[in-house]
Each structure stands twice: as structure tokens, then as C-alpha cells.
Image 1 (cartoon, rainbow, N blue to C red):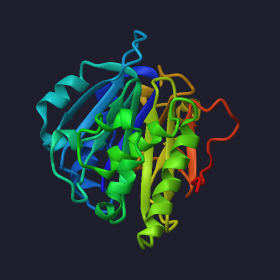
Image 2: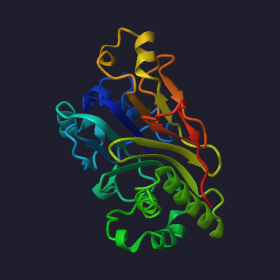
Image 3: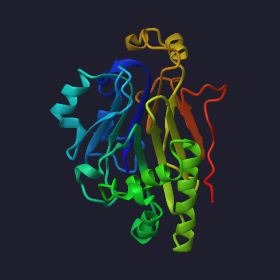
Length: 278
């Protein structure tokens, strides 16, 4: 499987989040604590939106491991962004190639995934046939994750992100049952349009991969005033991660099974239930 991180809030240098925390995503690429595999070295990727109002994100991906990539370290030390994705990959069988590295981009949208479609080779044709023909040529790689993305775009990601992801998940569940796949879907997904991040945690068997979100920055500042990089960020700044970036109590909250979070939420609750639309 994989590990990923989504940041939204006050613009920061990418290395503030990617490299500096005790158990950073770069550390997780080599020594994951909660992943199926401890090493995630089958490629990595960054996707970020600039602070100047350009709504098309930039993407940087490579097939090597994140922990020793000097270009990644150089870029992260000089790029400042209010919203960015980072992903370290452990392949579930698809080729190790740049087009299979996350995040995936279409227009203003970014998408990344941890998990798998069970017996994808059996469902792949039917899933691909459900992608809007106008979008089919946009699929560059061979992963189930990218097909999931373009299914969500097909099912109305522009208009209703939670509904589009629910319809995508519903299709995978239905086709899985038709093909005799008992547990067809395992996913934690992040998707963004440059203004908000939606993060989903769901699996057919009800035992999804780990996913956490940070507490509000003002809460963390009150608990740990010595954390210097939190002094300048807004109270609404949040990070969603496959596993916590450190061990400090009160900082990280587990996203419950079959739920999704929106950042910034604009709500009194941190998350809502997620149910595939069958």
C-alpha cells in the first residue's frame, strides 16, 4: 500500500511538513508504522497549488524512493503553498513508472489513493468502460487508483465531490459482486479542487487503512506552545495523513471508518458518514 499527506491552510514551505516532523512522510517512506508495508519506495509525488490564484496545480513525480531524492528536498525547501498533496508509493502489482505515481491531476483537480480494488484485473475492463469516453484518453497509467479518479470525474466531481466518490465506490462494489469478488474496495482517498480537500476512509470489509486529521492549530498551540512552526498558521490550518507525523497527545485524531472530512469544513463537525451509492 502507500502513505500520503494533504495540507490545507496558511502557505508554508513544503519541507516544513514533509521533512521536519518527527515521523514525517519522508520518514514514513522508509519506516512506516501503520502501513501494510514498512517501506514505501516505489515512487513518490507532490501536487501543489500556488498562492497567486492560479487554480491549476503543479505536479512533480518520480519512480525512485522519496527518502534519498535530492530534487525533492531542493524543491520542498523553496516552494511555498497553501494547499498541497504528497504521496509515497508501495505498488500493489502495477508497474513502477512515473504515470503510476500519485497524485493524479485533471484540470484543477488532484487525487491520491491508498488501498486497492480487489482483483482489479477482473474488473478493469468494466470499470474503464464506465469512464466518460471524452476522458478515457486522459488515463496515462495502469493503476486502479487512476481509474477510480476518472470514474469520479465522470460521475460529477466538479459538481458534487462526495457524491461522485460515493457513486464511484458504488460501481466498484456492484461490479465486484457481479464478478464474485467478496471485498472489492479498500481506500483512503484525498481529492482537492484547490480550495478544499475532501478525505475519505472506506473499505468493503469495514477494516480500512489508517487515516488521521490534525486538531485545530489553536488547540495544538495551546497544548504545545513550544512548536515554533505553528505560531504563524491560521486556526483553520489542517493536515490529513495516513499516519500521525508525531506522538504528541491531542494533535492527531483518527478519521472513523466509513466517513469523510472536508477541509476547511465550514461545519461544526469534523467529519460526515460515507456510504457508496449502489
